[in-house]
Length: 571
Image (cartoon, rainbow, N blue to C red; front, side, top):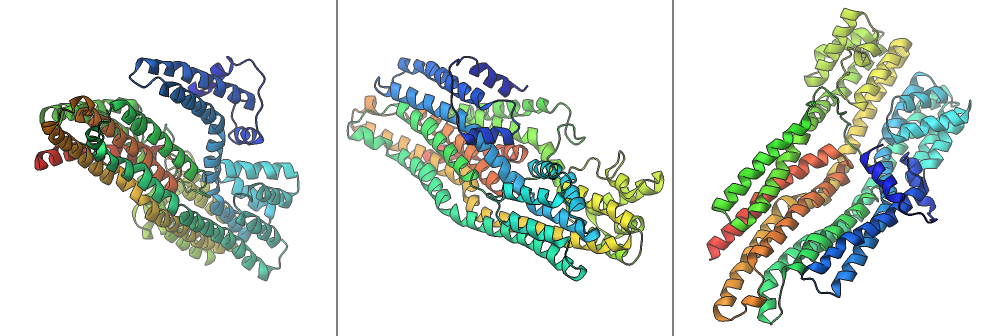
Protein backbone atom coordinates (compact mmCIF):
# COMPACT_ATOMS: atom_id res chain seq x y z
CA UNK A 1 0.00 0.00 0.00
CA UNK A 2 1.37 3.39 -1.02
CA UNK A 3 1.61 6.40 1.25
CA UNK A 4 -1.43 8.06 -0.30
CA UNK A 5 -3.51 4.89 0.10
CA UNK A 6 -2.40 4.58 3.72
CA UNK A 7 -3.35 8.21 4.36
CA UNK A 8 -6.83 7.68 2.91
CA UNK A 9 -7.38 4.65 5.14
CA UNK A 10 -6.09 6.48 8.21
CA UNK A 11 -8.39 9.46 7.62
CA UNK A 12 -11.42 7.26 6.97
CA UNK A 13 -11.04 5.51 10.33
CA UNK A 14 -11.83 8.75 12.15
CA UNK A 15 -15.33 9.02 10.64
CA UNK A 16 -17.51 6.28 12.14
CA UNK A 17 -20.90 7.37 10.76
CA UNK A 18 -22.74 5.86 7.74
CA UNK A 19 -22.18 7.63 4.41
CA UNK A 20 -23.74 7.62 0.95
CA UNK A 21 -22.08 7.89 -2.44
CA UNK A 22 -22.95 8.15 -6.11
CA UNK A 23 -22.50 5.68 -8.94
CA UNK A 24 -19.86 7.90 -10.53
CA UNK A 25 -17.51 7.42 -7.58
CA UNK A 26 -18.02 3.65 -7.56
CA UNK A 27 -17.45 3.42 -11.32
CA UNK A 28 -14.30 5.54 -11.12
CA UNK A 29 -12.78 3.47 -8.32
CA UNK A 30 -13.61 0.27 -10.21
CA UNK A 31 -12.00 1.55 -13.40
CA UNK A 32 -8.88 2.67 -11.51
CA UNK A 33 -8.77 -0.71 -9.72
CA UNK A 34 -8.46 1.21 -6.47
CA UNK A 35 -8.02 -0.75 -3.22
CA UNK A 36 -10.49 1.60 -1.52
CA UNK A 37 -14.25 1.26 -1.31
CA UNK A 38 -16.45 4.30 -2.08
CA UNK A 39 -17.35 4.53 1.61
CA UNK A 40 -13.66 4.83 2.53
CA UNK A 41 -13.12 7.70 0.11
CA UNK A 42 -16.21 9.57 1.30
CA UNK A 43 -15.23 9.21 4.95
CA UNK A 44 -11.66 10.29 4.21
CA UNK A 45 -12.96 13.40 2.47
CA UNK A 46 -15.04 14.49 5.44
CA UNK A 47 -12.15 13.98 7.88
CA UNK A 48 -9.73 15.81 5.55
CA UNK A 49 -12.10 18.77 5.54
CA UNK A 50 -12.22 18.84 9.34
CA UNK A 51 -8.43 18.61 9.56
CA UNK A 52 -8.09 21.50 7.10
CA UNK A 53 -10.46 23.63 9.15
CA UNK A 54 -8.51 22.90 12.34
CA UNK A 55 -5.22 23.85 10.72
CA UNK A 56 -6.63 27.08 9.34
CA UNK A 57 -7.76 28.21 12.80
CA UNK A 58 -4.28 29.73 12.94
CA UNK A 59 -5.61 32.46 10.62
CA UNK A 60 -7.15 34.10 13.69
CA UNK A 61 -3.59 35.01 14.70
CA UNK A 62 -2.98 36.91 11.44
CA UNK A 63 -3.99 40.49 10.57
CA UNK A 64 -6.92 39.18 8.52
CA UNK A 65 -10.20 40.73 9.55
CA UNK A 66 -12.17 38.65 12.03
CA UNK A 67 -15.27 38.32 9.84
CA UNK A 68 -13.21 37.02 6.89
CA UNK A 69 -11.47 34.18 8.73
CA UNK A 70 -14.55 31.92 9.17
CA UNK A 71 -15.44 32.43 5.52
CA UNK A 72 -11.95 31.39 4.41
CA UNK A 73 -11.92 28.38 6.73
CA UNK A 74 -15.35 27.17 5.59
CA UNK A 75 -14.53 27.64 1.92
CA UNK A 76 -11.20 25.82 2.26
CA UNK A 77 -12.71 22.92 4.22
CA UNK A 78 -15.56 22.42 1.75
CA UNK A 79 -13.11 22.62 -1.15
CA UNK A 80 -10.96 19.89 0.39
CA UNK A 81 -14.00 17.65 0.99
CA UNK A 82 -15.18 18.14 -2.59
CA UNK A 83 -11.67 17.62 -3.93
CA UNK A 84 -11.21 14.28 -2.18
CA UNK A 85 -14.65 13.04 -3.23
CA UNK A 86 -14.20 14.00 -6.89
CA UNK A 87 -10.50 13.12 -7.29
CA UNK A 88 -11.19 9.48 -8.32
CA UNK A 89 -13.67 10.61 -10.98
CA UNK A 90 -11.18 13.14 -12.34
CA UNK A 91 -8.38 10.57 -12.39
CA UNK A 92 -10.63 8.04 -14.10
CA UNK A 93 -11.74 10.57 -16.73
CA UNK A 94 -8.14 11.46 -17.57
CA UNK A 95 -7.12 7.77 -17.59
CA UNK A 96 -9.97 6.95 -19.99
CA UNK A 97 -8.88 9.83 -22.23
CA UNK A 98 -5.33 8.48 -22.40
CA UNK A 99 -6.61 4.94 -22.93
CA UNK A 100 -8.76 6.01 -25.88
CA UNK A 101 -5.67 7.44 -27.54
CA UNK A 102 -4.71 3.81 -28.19
CA UNK A 103 -7.98 3.01 -29.99
CA UNK A 104 -6.70 3.57 -33.55
CA UNK A 105 -3.67 1.42 -32.81
CA UNK A 106 -5.77 -1.35 -31.24
CA UNK A 107 -8.22 -1.51 -34.14
CA UNK A 108 -5.31 -1.30 -36.54
CA UNK A 109 -3.65 -4.36 -34.99
CA UNK A 110 -6.90 -6.33 -35.24
CA UNK A 111 -7.34 -5.30 -38.89
CA UNK A 112 -3.81 -6.32 -39.77
CA UNK A 113 -4.18 -9.68 -38.04
CA UNK A 114 -7.37 -10.36 -39.99
CA UNK A 115 -5.59 -9.64 -43.23
CA UNK A 116 -3.34 -12.59 -42.44
CA UNK A 117 -6.05 -14.85 -41.03
CA UNK A 118 -9.74 -13.83 -41.35
CA UNK A 119 -10.73 -14.81 -37.82
CA UNK A 120 -12.24 -12.27 -35.45
CA UNK A 121 -11.24 -14.36 -32.45
CA UNK A 122 -7.55 -14.47 -33.28
CA UNK A 123 -7.53 -10.83 -34.42
CA UNK A 124 -9.12 -9.54 -31.24
CA UNK A 125 -6.89 -11.63 -29.02
CA UNK A 126 -3.84 -10.45 -30.93
CA UNK A 127 -4.93 -6.81 -30.54
CA UNK A 128 -5.47 -7.25 -26.80
CA UNK A 129 -2.31 -9.24 -26.13
CA UNK A 130 -0.02 -6.86 -28.01
CA UNK A 131 -1.29 -3.74 -26.26
CA UNK A 132 -0.98 -2.19 -22.83
CA UNK A 133 -3.25 -0.12 -20.66
CA UNK A 134 -6.94 -0.07 -19.72
CA UNK A 135 -8.21 -0.43 -23.28
CA UNK A 136 -6.37 -3.69 -23.93
CA UNK A 137 -7.31 -4.99 -20.47
CA UNK A 138 -10.96 -4.16 -21.11
CA UNK A 139 -10.91 -5.93 -24.48
CA UNK A 140 -9.30 -9.01 -22.92
CA UNK A 141 -12.02 -9.16 -20.28
CA UNK A 142 -14.83 -8.88 -22.81
CA UNK A 143 -13.33 -11.59 -24.99
CA UNK A 144 -12.89 -13.85 -21.95
CA UNK A 145 -16.49 -13.29 -20.87
CA UNK A 146 -17.71 -14.05 -24.39
CA UNK A 147 -16.63 -17.68 -23.76
CA UNK A 148 -16.36 -18.96 -27.31
CA UNK A 149 -18.22 -16.08 -28.96
CA UNK A 150 -15.45 -13.66 -29.93
CA UNK A 151 -17.67 -11.48 -32.05
CA UNK A 152 -19.96 -10.68 -29.12
CA UNK A 153 -16.91 -9.94 -26.99
CA UNK A 154 -15.72 -7.39 -29.52
CA UNK A 155 -19.12 -5.77 -29.80
CA UNK A 156 -19.77 -5.57 -26.06
CA UNK A 157 -16.35 -4.00 -25.69
CA UNK A 158 -17.33 -1.38 -28.26
CA UNK A 159 -20.65 -0.74 -26.49
CA UNK A 160 -18.84 -0.08 -23.20
CA UNK A 161 -16.65 2.64 -24.70
CA UNK A 162 -19.02 4.05 -27.32
CA UNK A 163 -20.33 6.89 -25.14
CA UNK A 164 -16.81 8.34 -25.04
CA UNK A 165 -15.76 7.26 -28.52
CA UNK A 166 -18.76 6.83 -30.87
CA UNK A 167 -16.64 5.82 -33.86
CA UNK A 168 -15.52 2.68 -32.02
CA UNK A 169 -18.92 1.01 -32.41
CA UNK A 170 -19.02 1.44 -36.19
CA UNK A 171 -15.44 0.28 -36.55
CA UNK A 172 -16.09 -2.80 -34.38
CA UNK A 173 -19.17 -3.79 -36.36
CA UNK A 174 -17.27 -3.47 -39.63
CA UNK A 175 -14.44 -5.55 -38.18
CA UNK A 176 -16.85 -8.26 -37.06
CA UNK A 177 -18.59 -8.27 -40.43
CA UNK A 178 -15.34 -8.71 -42.34
CA UNK A 179 -14.94 -12.30 -41.13
CA UNK A 180 -17.88 -13.55 -43.20
CA UNK A 181 -17.38 -11.18 -46.13
CA UNK A 182 -16.34 -12.63 -49.52
CA UNK A 183 -12.64 -12.54 -50.27
CA UNK A 184 -13.07 -9.64 -52.66
CA UNK A 185 -14.99 -7.60 -50.11
CA UNK A 186 -13.02 -8.42 -46.98
CA UNK A 187 -10.12 -6.12 -47.70
CA UNK A 188 -12.40 -3.15 -48.37
CA UNK A 189 -14.41 -3.85 -45.21
CA UNK A 190 -11.26 -3.95 -43.11
CA UNK A 191 -10.04 -0.72 -44.67
CA UNK A 192 -13.38 0.91 -43.83
CA UNK A 193 -13.09 -0.28 -40.22
CA UNK A 194 -9.71 1.36 -39.90
CA UNK A 195 -10.80 4.51 -41.71
CA UNK A 196 -13.83 4.84 -39.42
CA UNK A 197 -11.71 4.91 -36.28
CA UNK A 198 -9.15 7.33 -37.71
CA UNK A 199 -11.83 9.67 -39.02
CA UNK A 200 -13.69 9.55 -35.71
CA UNK A 201 -10.53 10.46 -33.82
CA UNK A 202 -9.77 13.32 -36.17
CA UNK A 203 -13.30 14.74 -35.94
CA UNK A 204 -13.48 14.53 -32.16
CA UNK A 205 -10.14 16.26 -31.73
CA UNK A 206 -11.14 18.99 -34.19
CA UNK A 207 -14.36 19.61 -32.24
CA UNK A 208 -12.47 19.69 -28.95
CA UNK A 209 -9.86 22.11 -30.29
CA UNK A 210 -12.60 24.44 -31.48
CA UNK A 211 -14.48 24.16 -28.17
CA UNK A 212 -11.52 25.09 -25.95
CA UNK A 213 -10.50 28.24 -27.79
CA UNK A 214 -12.90 30.36 -25.76
CA UNK A 215 -12.10 28.86 -22.33
CA UNK A 216 -8.33 29.03 -22.88
CA UNK A 217 -8.57 32.65 -24.01
CA UNK A 218 -10.62 33.47 -20.91
CA UNK A 219 -8.10 31.63 -18.75
CA UNK A 220 -5.29 33.66 -20.30
CA UNK A 221 -7.09 36.99 -19.96
CA UNK A 222 -8.78 36.73 -16.56
CA UNK A 223 -6.35 34.37 -14.87
CA UNK A 224 -3.07 36.00 -15.94
CA UNK A 225 -3.08 39.33 -17.75
CA UNK A 226 -5.84 41.15 -15.86
CA UNK A 227 -4.60 40.19 -12.36
CA UNK A 228 -1.05 41.18 -13.25
CA UNK A 229 -2.12 44.47 -14.79
CA UNK A 230 -4.09 45.40 -11.68
CA UNK A 231 -0.92 45.26 -9.59
CA UNK A 232 0.13 48.64 -10.99
CA UNK A 233 -2.99 50.21 -9.46
CA UNK A 234 -1.97 49.43 -5.88
CA UNK A 235 -0.65 52.99 -5.20
CA UNK A 236 -3.99 54.40 -6.33
CA UNK A 237 -5.70 52.72 -3.39
CA UNK A 238 -3.45 54.59 -0.98
CA UNK A 239 -4.13 57.88 -2.75
CA UNK A 240 -7.87 57.60 -2.11
CA UNK A 241 -7.22 56.75 1.53
CA UNK A 242 -7.73 52.99 1.46
CA UNK A 243 -5.22 51.14 3.63
CA UNK A 244 -3.71 48.31 1.62
CA UNK A 245 -2.18 45.34 3.45
CA UNK A 246 -0.34 42.35 2.11
CA UNK A 247 -2.86 39.75 3.26
CA UNK A 248 -5.56 40.39 0.64
CA UNK A 249 -2.89 40.02 -2.04
CA UNK A 250 -1.71 36.76 -0.51
CA UNK A 251 -5.28 35.46 -0.45
CA UNK A 252 -6.00 36.50 -4.05
CA UNK A 253 -2.70 35.85 -5.84
CA UNK A 254 -1.35 32.92 -3.85
CA UNK A 255 -4.61 31.14 -3.01
CA UNK A 256 -7.74 32.07 -4.96
CA UNK A 257 -6.18 32.58 -8.38
CA UNK A 258 -4.03 29.39 -8.27
CA UNK A 259 -7.04 27.35 -7.11
CA UNK A 260 -9.16 28.87 -9.87
CA UNK A 261 -6.51 28.18 -12.52
CA UNK A 262 -6.13 24.61 -11.29
CA UNK A 263 -9.89 24.02 -11.33
CA UNK A 264 -10.13 25.41 -14.87
CA UNK A 265 -7.24 23.17 -15.95
CA UNK A 266 -8.94 20.07 -14.55
CA UNK A 267 -12.17 21.07 -16.27
CA UNK A 268 -10.41 21.33 -19.63
CA UNK A 269 -8.46 18.09 -19.22
CA UNK A 270 -11.48 15.99 -18.31
CA UNK A 271 -13.18 17.07 -21.55
CA UNK A 272 -10.38 16.02 -23.85
CA UNK A 273 -11.72 13.12 -25.97
CA UNK A 274 -8.44 11.27 -26.58
CA UNK A 275 -4.76 11.71 -25.74
CA UNK A 276 -1.59 10.29 -27.27
CA UNK A 277 0.79 9.96 -24.30
CA UNK A 278 4.43 9.18 -25.04
CA UNK A 279 5.89 5.76 -24.20
CA UNK A 280 6.27 4.92 -20.53
CA UNK A 281 9.86 4.54 -19.33
CA UNK A 282 10.09 2.13 -16.37
CA UNK A 283 12.22 3.15 -13.37
CA UNK A 284 14.55 0.17 -13.91
CA UNK A 285 15.36 1.13 -17.50
CA UNK A 286 19.14 1.02 -18.11
CA UNK A 287 19.04 4.60 -19.37
CA UNK A 288 17.72 5.90 -16.03
CA UNK A 289 20.37 6.40 -13.29
CA UNK A 290 20.01 4.14 -10.26
CA UNK A 291 20.16 6.91 -7.67
CA UNK A 292 18.24 9.57 -9.52
CA UNK A 293 17.30 11.37 -6.30
CA UNK A 294 20.93 12.47 -5.85
CA UNK A 295 20.35 14.96 -8.66
CA UNK A 296 18.33 17.04 -6.22
CA UNK A 297 21.69 18.43 -5.08
CA UNK A 298 22.04 20.09 -8.48
CA UNK A 299 18.90 22.09 -7.76
CA UNK A 300 20.10 23.01 -4.28
CA UNK A 301 23.37 24.30 -5.71
CA UNK A 302 21.67 26.27 -8.49
CA UNK A 303 19.16 27.75 -6.05
CA UNK A 304 21.92 28.83 -3.70
CA UNK A 305 23.80 30.56 -6.51
CA UNK A 306 20.63 32.34 -7.65
CA UNK A 307 19.84 33.43 -4.10
CA UNK A 308 23.32 34.85 -3.50
CA UNK A 309 23.53 36.55 -6.92
CA UNK A 310 20.15 38.24 -6.48
CA UNK A 311 21.05 39.35 -2.97
CA UNK A 312 24.24 40.99 -4.26
CA UNK A 313 23.27 42.41 -7.65
CA UNK A 314 19.48 42.41 -7.99
CA UNK A 315 16.54 43.44 -5.85
CA UNK A 316 17.62 41.71 -2.65
CA UNK A 317 14.03 41.18 -1.48
CA UNK A 318 13.51 38.86 -4.49
CA UNK A 319 16.40 36.57 -3.50
CA UNK A 320 14.04 33.92 -1.99
CA UNK A 321 12.01 33.92 -5.21
CA UNK A 322 15.15 33.54 -7.31
CA UNK A 323 16.49 30.72 -5.16
CA UNK A 324 13.18 28.85 -5.06
CA UNK A 325 12.41 29.23 -8.77
CA UNK A 326 15.85 28.43 -10.17
CA UNK A 327 16.52 25.70 -7.61
CA UNK A 328 13.17 24.02 -8.19
CA UNK A 329 13.49 24.31 -11.95
CA UNK A 330 16.99 22.83 -12.08
CA UNK A 331 15.87 20.00 -9.79
CA UNK A 332 13.02 19.08 -12.16
CA UNK A 333 15.30 19.28 -15.18
CA UNK A 334 17.91 17.07 -13.54
CA UNK A 335 15.37 14.48 -12.42
CA UNK A 336 13.48 14.11 -15.68
CA UNK A 337 16.18 14.70 -18.30
CA UNK A 338 17.33 11.04 -18.34
CA UNK A 339 13.76 9.89 -18.95
CA UNK A 340 13.32 12.39 -21.76
CA UNK A 341 16.59 11.18 -23.29
CA UNK A 342 15.20 7.64 -23.41
CA UNK A 343 12.00 9.01 -24.94
CA UNK A 344 13.94 10.81 -27.65
CA UNK A 345 15.75 7.58 -28.46
CA UNK A 346 12.39 5.81 -28.77
CA UNK A 347 11.19 8.49 -31.17
CA UNK A 348 14.34 8.06 -33.23
CA UNK A 349 13.71 4.32 -33.43
CA UNK A 350 10.12 4.91 -34.54
CA UNK A 351 11.09 7.58 -37.08
CA UNK A 352 11.71 5.16 -39.99
CA UNK A 353 9.51 2.23 -38.97
CA UNK A 354 7.20 2.93 -41.90
CA UNK A 355 10.05 2.55 -44.40
CA UNK A 356 11.32 -0.59 -42.68
CA UNK A 357 7.92 -2.26 -42.61
CA UNK A 358 7.23 -1.40 -46.23
CA UNK A 359 10.57 -2.84 -47.29
CA UNK A 360 10.06 -6.05 -45.29
CA UNK A 361 6.48 -6.41 -46.54
CA UNK A 362 7.50 -6.08 -50.18
CA UNK A 363 10.27 -8.62 -49.73
CA UNK A 364 7.92 -11.13 -48.09
CA UNK A 365 5.31 -10.59 -50.82
CA UNK A 366 7.99 -11.44 -53.40
CA UNK A 367 8.64 -14.76 -51.66
CA UNK A 368 11.65 -13.90 -49.49
CA UNK A 369 11.88 -15.06 -45.90
CA UNK A 370 11.21 -12.55 -43.12
CA UNK A 371 14.70 -13.22 -41.72
CA UNK A 372 16.40 -12.15 -44.93
CA UNK A 373 14.03 -9.18 -45.27
CA UNK A 374 15.02 -8.00 -41.79
CA UNK A 375 18.71 -8.21 -42.75
CA UNK A 376 18.01 -6.22 -45.91
CA UNK A 377 16.16 -3.56 -43.92
CA UNK A 378 19.19 -3.29 -41.63
CA UNK A 379 21.28 -2.23 -44.65
CA UNK A 380 18.79 0.12 -46.27
CA UNK A 381 16.92 1.84 -43.43
CA UNK A 382 18.82 4.79 -41.92
CA UNK A 383 19.45 6.05 -38.37
CA UNK A 384 18.29 4.36 -35.17
CA UNK A 385 15.60 2.29 -36.89
CA UNK A 386 18.20 0.67 -39.11
CA UNK A 387 20.41 0.02 -36.07
CA UNK A 388 17.55 -1.87 -34.39
CA UNK A 389 17.04 -4.06 -37.44
CA UNK A 390 20.80 -4.59 -37.67
CA UNK A 391 20.92 -5.78 -34.05
CA UNK A 392 17.93 -8.04 -34.64
CA UNK A 393 19.56 -9.56 -37.72
CA UNK A 394 22.77 -10.09 -35.75
CA UNK A 395 20.92 -11.86 -32.92
CA UNK A 396 19.18 -14.10 -35.46
CA UNK A 397 22.47 -15.04 -37.09
CA UNK A 398 24.47 -15.62 -33.91
CA UNK A 399 21.90 -17.32 -31.72
CA UNK A 400 19.71 -18.93 -34.41
CA UNK A 401 16.51 -17.69 -32.76
CA UNK A 402 13.10 -16.76 -34.15
CA UNK A 403 12.15 -13.34 -35.46
CA UNK A 404 10.18 -12.61 -32.29
CA UNK A 405 13.10 -13.60 -30.07
CA UNK A 406 15.51 -11.49 -32.09
CA UNK A 407 13.41 -8.39 -31.36
CA UNK A 408 11.71 -9.11 -28.02
CA UNK A 409 13.73 -11.88 -26.39
CA UNK A 410 16.29 -11.69 -23.62
CA UNK A 411 18.91 -10.38 -26.02
CA UNK A 412 16.44 -8.82 -28.44
CA UNK A 413 16.99 -5.54 -30.22
CA UNK A 414 13.92 -3.97 -28.56
CA UNK A 415 14.61 -5.25 -25.06
CA UNK A 416 15.57 -1.80 -23.72
CA UNK A 417 13.33 0.25 -26.05
CA UNK A 418 9.87 0.84 -24.48
CA UNK A 419 8.05 1.44 -27.76
CA UNK A 420 4.58 -0.15 -28.08
CA UNK A 421 4.63 0.53 -31.81
CA UNK A 422 7.93 -1.17 -32.39
CA UNK A 423 6.89 -4.14 -30.26
CA UNK A 424 3.62 -4.53 -32.18
CA UNK A 425 5.66 -4.43 -35.36
CA UNK A 426 7.92 -7.19 -34.06
CA UNK A 427 4.97 -9.43 -33.15
CA UNK A 428 3.41 -8.94 -36.57
CA UNK A 429 6.72 -9.82 -38.22
CA UNK A 430 6.80 -12.98 -36.09
CA UNK A 431 3.37 -13.94 -37.44
CA UNK A 432 4.54 -13.13 -40.95
CA UNK A 433 7.50 -15.46 -40.48
CA UNK A 434 5.05 -18.28 -39.70
CA UNK A 435 2.52 -17.46 -42.44
CA UNK A 436 5.03 -16.72 -45.17
CA UNK A 437 4.21 -14.96 -48.44
CA UNK A 438 0.48 -14.24 -47.75
CA UNK A 439 1.48 -12.09 -44.80
CA UNK A 440 3.50 -9.69 -46.94
CA UNK A 441 0.45 -7.63 -47.83
CA UNK A 442 -0.45 -7.28 -44.14
CA UNK A 443 3.03 -5.98 -43.31
CA UNK A 444 2.78 -3.40 -46.09
CA UNK A 445 -0.68 -2.46 -44.81
CA UNK A 446 0.78 -2.03 -41.32
CA UNK A 447 3.30 0.42 -42.75
CA UNK A 448 0.46 2.42 -44.30
CA UNK A 449 -1.54 2.27 -41.06
CA UNK A 450 1.44 3.41 -38.98
CA UNK A 451 2.02 6.32 -41.34
CA UNK A 452 -1.64 7.37 -41.04
CA UNK A 453 -1.51 7.09 -37.26
CA UNK A 454 1.65 9.19 -37.01
CA UNK A 455 0.11 11.84 -39.23
CA UNK A 456 -3.05 11.82 -37.10
CA UNK A 457 -1.03 12.44 -33.94
CA UNK A 458 0.98 15.20 -35.58
CA UNK A 459 -2.18 16.83 -36.90
CA UNK A 460 -3.98 16.81 -33.53
CA UNK A 461 -0.94 18.16 -31.71
CA UNK A 462 -0.53 20.93 -34.27
CA UNK A 463 -4.16 21.93 -33.80
CA UNK A 464 -3.86 21.96 -30.03
CA UNK A 465 -0.49 23.72 -30.09
CA UNK A 466 -2.10 26.64 -31.91
CA UNK A 467 -4.45 27.03 -28.93
CA UNK A 468 -2.28 26.05 -25.97
CA UNK A 469 1.05 27.48 -27.09
CA UNK A 470 0.07 30.87 -25.70
CA UNK A 471 -0.34 29.38 -22.22
CA UNK A 472 3.17 27.94 -22.20
CA UNK A 473 4.76 31.12 -23.53
CA UNK A 474 2.81 33.18 -21.01
CA UNK A 475 4.13 31.12 -18.11
CA UNK A 476 7.75 31.34 -19.30
CA UNK A 477 8.03 34.81 -20.85
CA UNK A 478 5.04 37.13 -21.09
CA UNK A 479 3.72 36.60 -17.56
CA UNK A 480 7.05 37.29 -15.85
CA UNK A 481 7.64 40.33 -18.08
CA UNK A 482 4.25 41.85 -17.29
CA UNK A 483 4.54 40.94 -13.60
CA UNK A 484 8.03 42.40 -13.27
CA UNK A 485 7.06 45.59 -15.08
CA UNK A 486 3.93 46.19 -12.98
CA UNK A 487 5.74 45.54 -9.70
CA UNK A 488 8.49 47.97 -10.65
CA UNK A 489 5.97 50.60 -11.77
CA UNK A 490 3.98 50.16 -8.56
CA UNK A 491 7.15 50.74 -6.56
CA UNK A 492 8.04 53.88 -8.51
CA UNK A 493 4.52 55.27 -8.21
CA UNK A 494 4.60 54.62 -4.47
CA UNK A 495 7.86 56.58 -4.17
CA UNK A 496 6.43 59.62 -5.98
CA UNK A 497 3.23 59.53 -3.95
CA UNK A 498 5.11 59.43 -0.68
CA UNK A 499 7.26 62.41 -1.68
CA UNK A 500 4.30 64.77 -1.46
CA UNK A 501 1.89 63.06 0.93
CA UNK A 502 2.15 61.36 4.26
CA UNK A 503 0.64 58.04 3.17
CA UNK A 504 3.26 55.69 4.49
CA UNK A 505 0.86 53.86 6.77
CA UNK A 506 -1.61 53.09 3.97
CA UNK A 507 0.99 52.28 1.33
CA UNK A 508 1.87 48.66 0.69
CA UNK A 509 5.62 48.00 0.69
CA UNK A 510 6.85 47.09 -2.79
CA UNK A 511 9.09 44.43 -1.25
CA UNK A 512 6.06 42.53 0.05
CA UNK A 513 4.21 42.99 -3.21
CA UNK A 514 7.18 41.75 -5.23
CA UNK A 515 7.43 38.54 -3.22
CA UNK A 516 3.69 37.81 -3.48
CA UNK A 517 3.63 38.39 -7.24
CA UNK A 518 6.86 36.40 -7.58
CA UNK A 519 5.19 33.40 -5.96
CA UNK A 520 2.30 33.85 -8.40
CA UNK A 521 4.74 33.87 -11.34
CA UNK A 522 6.21 30.56 -10.15
CA UNK A 523 2.69 29.19 -9.73
CA UNK A 524 1.89 30.01 -13.36
CA UNK A 525 4.85 27.88 -14.43
CA UNK A 526 3.49 24.96 -12.42
CA UNK A 527 -0.08 25.31 -13.72
CA UNK A 528 -0.10 26.74 -17.25
CA UNK A 529 2.86 24.76 -18.61
CA UNK A 530 1.51 21.39 -17.36
CA UNK A 531 -1.93 22.29 -18.73
CA UNK A 532 -0.54 23.09 -22.16
CA UNK A 533 1.45 19.85 -22.26
CA UNK A 534 -1.35 17.70 -20.85
CA UNK A 535 -3.79 18.96 -23.48
CA UNK A 536 -1.36 17.99 -26.23
CA UNK A 537 0.18 14.80 -24.84
CA UNK A 538 -1.84 13.65 -21.85
CA UNK A 539 -0.80 13.64 -18.19
CA UNK A 540 2.74 12.39 -18.53
CA UNK A 541 4.78 12.99 -15.38
CA UNK A 542 8.21 13.07 -17.00
CA UNK A 543 7.23 15.39 -19.83
CA UNK A 544 5.35 17.76 -17.54
CA UNK A 545 8.09 17.72 -14.91
CA UNK A 546 10.85 18.50 -17.39
CA UNK A 547 9.09 21.36 -19.16
CA UNK A 548 7.73 22.82 -15.93
CA UNK A 549 11.33 22.91 -14.70
CA UNK A 550 12.45 24.60 -17.89
CA UNK A 551 9.66 27.15 -17.51
CA UNK A 552 10.78 27.91 -13.94
CA UNK A 553 14.40 28.33 -14.99
CA UNK A 554 13.34 30.82 -17.68
CA UNK A 555 10.57 32.69 -15.86
CA UNK A 556 12.43 33.34 -12.61
CA UNK A 557 15.38 35.31 -14.08
CA UNK A 558 13.02 37.11 -16.45
CA UNK A 559 10.87 38.31 -13.55
CA UNK A 560 13.77 39.35 -11.32
CA UNK A 561 15.64 41.05 -14.18
CA UNK A 562 12.52 42.91 -15.32
CA UNK A 563 11.84 44.31 -11.85
CA UNK A 564 15.45 45.50 -11.61
CA UNK A 565 15.72 46.80 -15.18
CA UNK A 566 12.41 48.69 -15.29
CA UNK A 567 13.05 50.18 -11.86
CA UNK A 568 16.58 51.26 -12.85
CA UNK A 569 15.70 52.72 -16.26
CA UNK A 570 12.59 54.65 -15.25
CA UNK A 571 14.00 55.78 -11.92
